[in-house]
Image (cartoon, rainbow, N blue to C red):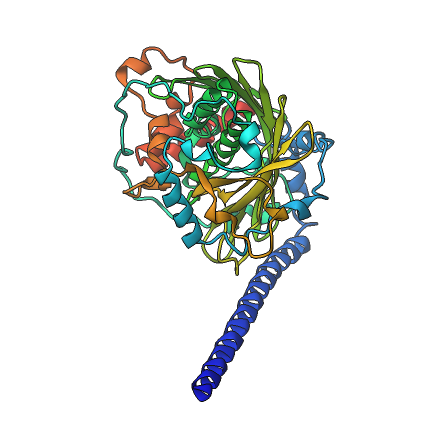
Length: 486
């Protein structure tokens, strides 16, 4: 028996050693990859510097021609760098999710949550939050919206798409604002940035639920639902490798979705810097935002920093505000392109609760990417009253109380309750668009008669791209950009 135990221990030690060696190899591969990309970037810049003097007169010509152009807003964006930046000095207060946020744990929590359908699970539980829930109904009644049939697929492309190397186009713009880079239409998806604003409201039913919980006096579940809503807006970005169209000055997009109880309007209101504003009305709540997206290319990645505030106001007057986190697109030169969202999101409420969420940055050896974790804090006492955990492309959960005060070995996922889960799509679509995203650019006969000529659905380059008419789309895109420069 002892001999068998000894052999088993030796085998475990050997496996552990192999595991450590594999992690070291992965780290080395990641380092080598970064060094290779950096070398390519440096060599490119060195070759260009050799030709700089000979090409200076051409550079001067292009700089004069670019003044007041549709895409050059570097100087204007730099003037906005004075936005207040909040630090994360208290990041240590987050519960460490590495030990328990596994796929199996999430599936288990999701299963338990379905058993407790109707949110009745939170009542009668022996917890500190019973005071907050006293006298509150165990279920909420949501408004039933009418069914509206919408298209399920994009039109079949009429032409074969031509592959274009991104590196050959943006290599001259390392460290610069990417709003000054003109990309061919092959890097776009058939949606505008104005429509992308509305796509963030795909899971607006979470706001409807937050409204109802607040009506019943449950402010805690209200902000938990709002936190899930703020995270859900990122779920559609997984697998999306193309950028939306930059709107023209004065371009608009309006949507009337009775099947969601929503009326939405967005417009590009400023050109230098580029600012997009939107307003949405639901049943008992309003949502509005303005955003200016700064983008820079760092050799191996593109970094997108949103500047702006999102505001959600309920009919009872309670208001919540937050800003988006940083988005980066990786493997521009080598490997498979993917995007990640990281940073701290603070949801400030005018009532008794606020929320802080941390989007964890992904690494090559991370077995659980896309993690989000944080907590809800009582504004009156400073006490942490709930923890949130999940993944921005899968689901979000909450646990009552402060797990950091629990004994060692405590697994919060045993008590985790599902707040939101991403819809599962059976079929894969062009551009990896969700069914909701596919409906955003749909143009029916009745709708065409009611839309203003400034609506994004009527942009010829975007419509040609949706139809797979790539040559026409590219020509129209260049024509519109040239017109706006005049």
